[in-house]
Image (spheres, one colour):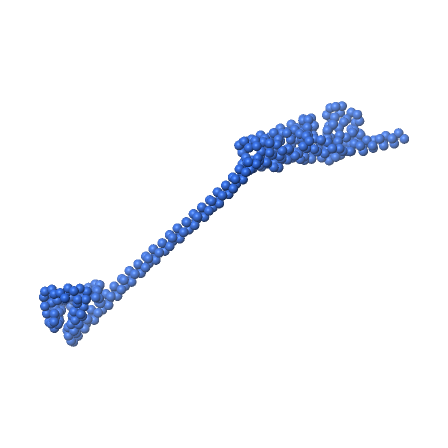
Length: 363
């Protein structure tokens, strides 16, 4: 009978030892639910990811591991219950002054974990409250080293610096700060307006720069086009002049060859029968043609005294040709003919006339 009563009393105590209740950690801004301090019922079951700190007669004895544990009634007492899970703490909004004297309102989130339950229990009165206050003071200190523009650009670096500073101080508390994240940054309305104006000015600047670069590129393209056009035009003109010069040279050679051939044919014809009569006829024709062109370009001409005596003029020309044929050898005459054929001649030139024998007359 007595055994049954003791067994029921022990079961009741064990049942009441597993009840949980909300426990306030730190300030009102943060609350966390954890197991209440259990009663010593000899047999205790420690949940996973929790560490129970046991004191024997008011002095630290040991830390209970998760699972089944036995304690001595009255002598042993569970003094602290520490959660080994990752803890998330909301850092309240606070004001801070940047390096350029701008007041900012910043709030964040702190992630930490208890690594040493003994230090967390006996190293500091309220570890989470201490870490929260340390995070706020460290945030103010780090923000005071940065200007407003760098605060927005270097948020990752700011978070890393805050975590490093917290870990240096919280090592004695058995707490490890895993990361810190800034949730929001509030700037004064006037500063926000100035930032908006700065953004608009920066956009206008970029638009102006892009427009000027486009104008410059267009001017460069136009100049390059004109340069290429001038180069092509000069090359075309060069080719044209080369072709024109080649054509004129070919024309001169063709005329010279034609005249040389004509002279050879003429010399061959003069050696035939009645060649002198043909030469006389040719001289007479040229004489008449020359007189037909007189007084067309100028009203002043020079005429020989025997202008109407065509036969005497022809006789005189043939006499000059005969005397030259007698005094020069055939080889010298052939050289003269060749030189005459190679020299350029003017088709419109008037045949050489004998020396004038009369005075000047005007029409």
